[in-house]
Image 1 (cartoon, rainbow, N blue to C red):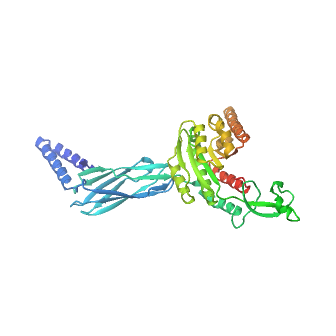
Image 2: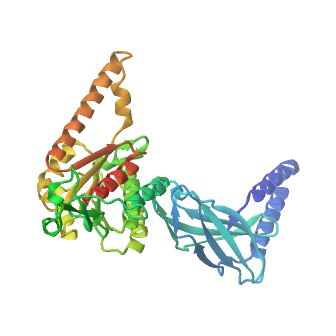
Image 3: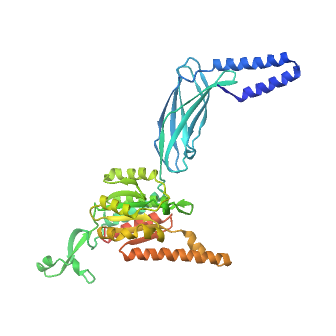
Length: 429
């Protein structure tokens, strides 16, 4: 049983009346009337124990968008149910929880709960509490039931706006405006006459011997190549840049690259690794790979531990037995690289092409330009030191045959997509 605010007001009025009477009999009379009214109200309230509750609605919603779940309530009793329903959810689900309901005897009602999530991941519904208020509005019957439901909040994919532009560039490479290129590891297209500047390695000597002129082979960008995207979910991915974790920027870049590569006809796989393999999407067909990657990224969170480089290398080599493009989304933190990636890099680079993509902090450039006072000068010196350390780390990776790209969080995704298209157009993929 639950008392309402109206019961409190009635009790206050009864107290004032008893004080006015100033007799024990009067006090007992007033209190007795209030108790009888409350008991009668509870007795006349519709039963809540036989209510039948079920859920339906969204199971996936993108961060930044609204979702909705519907709670169906069946009242099999013989009295109309009037009261309050509370559909509780995790705070980050952003649910509208309290609703006034009115369900006739033997009737059914549906209550829609709007969700505006503020974080990625699985949002679980809590217990549903139904309070059936009596006709006098003094007291209510109340019950709480578990009605399980989970909504997965997916990454927002903010870089989706760049996809049409990148697809247009892709069509220039392999579409109505196909660009014929020369390069090792691309698909043969046709023969043409040699012109000054052509790579002599492209000369087709047998065909030239049958003709009176020298001819060279031309190639077109290959399809059905393999891209393995690896997200470093170790401690460096938890660092915030412009208010967001580095991992979120890496996810956005991974989604744009995956969407573009799938449209290009390439196979895409994904791993997320720190001390454990946190996500694994391998061998999915092109129609399913992007939804599977999005689903896997939704529940990822940075782990405050150093990434195990040996685990990363062995997992990559087990997944990708043939040569492929390995895209590693990590941070150019010198200490983390020394203990994680660098020791295993020679082994990986001997088997695969490697592209490292890292998020830069625009704040470093702002601090490095500061000269207003001694404090600003010290901050500028620290920022310059951090930039120099990252540059040395990038140079060390480049010396081992690794391509390194860096960009702020809002441009990392399109810059990575451009790097992929550049490899595609040059026949290096």
